[in-house]
Length: 623
Image 1 (cartoon, rainbow, N blue to C red):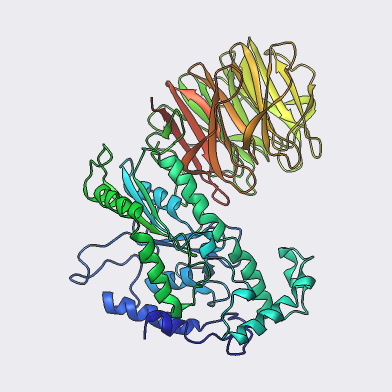
Image 2 (image 1 turned 135 degrees about the vertical axis):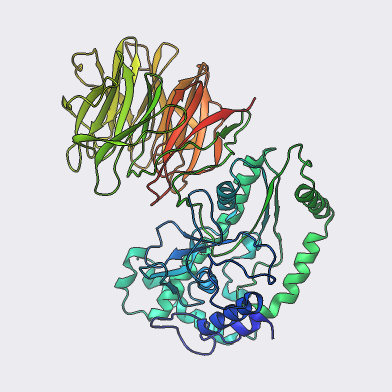
């Protein structure tokens, strides 16, 4: 009897049992655990072998670095948890047993009971991480960067079928001998009209529906979105790889769409369709090139140091960085490709919003607010080699974070107040021991982070209004006092604007107001603001950041809605911005920051989602 036969032999739902209680699963998780432990004991001699334990020769002469991903069951919106068998830059081996990690990443909702891992404490319950994203190829690139920093890699991705290969099977598609399953689906369907008006947070309100049915309905909805992500990730990687590193994806493109996780009886047809796919003329050429790329390090005209193989899995989710920094040599776009430079020795600090960068007295300065309830403002400086120990500004705080800029041989900072204080404050620093006492800008306020920029012997500041006021305002400072605020007519933003001088004008960029996440820009000649213009085909949930560099105006931003990728473009002062480029291998849920330092363009950003880490790297232009 095969492994899949043993695990999926008895479907409790088809046997007439609607899953309720703690298990809420169609299959016996105890059988799954027994089989996983048996395999581990056969190969390693110890069924409790840890993820961090050394292998005992001669069982396996060399260990393959491996990771799997699971999702915290009680926090499905949190970033996934990565279980690693290796150490890397900023990350360590996981402390749980191999079988525990395997159970966690296999705990497909409605199929198996969630897995509770107790080491390290506290105990955390996990489910299969594929609820959000089941193609971990981008994550594999990041992990490779942690292990082989600065080295070239070859990425091989193996899919489990195109979107149509993983869809939810309709009743009309069921085989004739599955009458019991058809009957159960009818029971489920009878509740759909009742549930149609409910959102996910209101599931608990539907107490008249059996818990087991609720569990299956919830998971059917969630699992339905998994298949939409695998090929989307592939599309991005295929675009970003563009002669930067060898990338190959193999994914059966037809005839396996209705084969489910538990359909072990259909392994024969699945195998036949896969072999047919792999023996086509185009795939034969692709396989040969893939093998050459792995074996011959000069296939792509550059030495390849390491190869990374990644397989689609419903346990692998979006890229998440748990270490003290992000590093990836790929910062890719066309036609002018960019890449992240070498990792900087940045200190392990955290923020709830996003950092701000500026250059002052030949040092790169960064300022940010704290993480969580800590709304204090911190700052540090970088000499091109190392970051100084972060310092805390005394007696000040901000809910949205500060902005910094150089003006009149001083470093200026502006910020909104902490908690419910929407006033705007400012201070300056002469490079000595500390910042001057904060001062309030009279009669203005913001719910976001203001932006600062210098042009023609004036320090300019722009900000969005407070609360529901999404209008954009600006003022200027002559070194003594701030001018009366002015509103820029006809524009609005949900996040806040970004300022930068360029070609003797002041440029402003922002995302739209309300649900409009499009990116807009305008310029100011010292007298009036030009009519706003919309960047075609781009959007951001947190707004863009702009800076002048090498006679160009550069812009970076995070994606719109749930897209935490970082994108960039540049403008030569002509009719429009060049098509957006995607920055491979890095993520953020807030606005990145840009500045020029030592003839490099530097970018700093907060991590994605619940990752509060701050990351910084130079951007290198490839001509």
